[in-house]
Amino acid sequence: GAVVSQHPSRVICKSGTSVKIECRSLDFQATTMFWYRQFPKKSLMLMATSNEGSKATYEQGVEKDKFLINHASLTLSTLTVTSAHPEDSSFYICSATKGLLYNEQFFGPGTRLTVL
Amino acid sequence: EDQVTQSPEALRLQEGESSSLNCSYTVSGLRGLFWYRQDPGKGPEFLFTLYSAGEEKEKERLKATLTKKESFLHITAPKPEDSATYLCAVLTIQGAQKLVFGQGTRLTINP
Image (cartoon, rainbow over all chains, first blue to last red; front, side, top):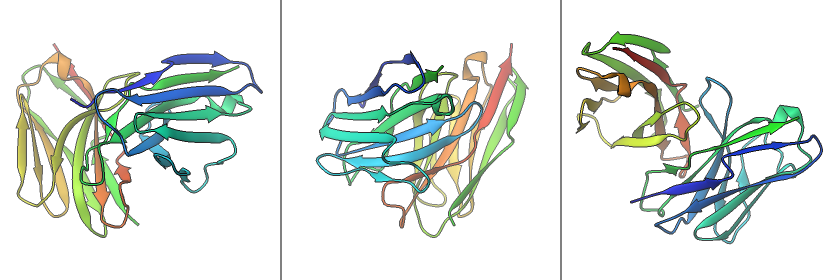
């Protein structure tokens, strides 16, 4: 199998606070993990690519100081939204690949972030 | 610039009414084309990977095909549980492991 989990599934926070979202590959080692953002009725927008043990690569227009990504192990990546504002409210989804020889990305169930 | 366009944006069918979803792509070098299913409030679920023109893959009522310019997702005798958004994405030679997604087709199957 190739199961990816995310925690939490939903989070509501106040403006100005930070929120951490975890992404775990449950039954495989993920050399690369990806973080996406999805607005209602829109497609997925890649935010960043993270490789275990190295700094994440952010897509153009994504603030790396606002969206902190850590890929500390082969099964865990975290996304921290710092000083969240209402415009950061969105659906955040992570995905993982099994390695460079594998093309398929397996997605987590997503995290709904609402910033009040 | 690599581009993926899906059509139609939304499609309503009656149960049992077969149809096809289209995914057109313009890329510098295709490594693979992927189809995913996404239910509301959930992450995308992997369906198929296609690598070369002429390739076909099937899973239950779904069949995916690939040409040099586009891919089709054929749905035969659909059931209400097939209602979802279907996403197409491409992996390019230049793009490392980055997927480029289309905007999706929202499919609704009425009983």
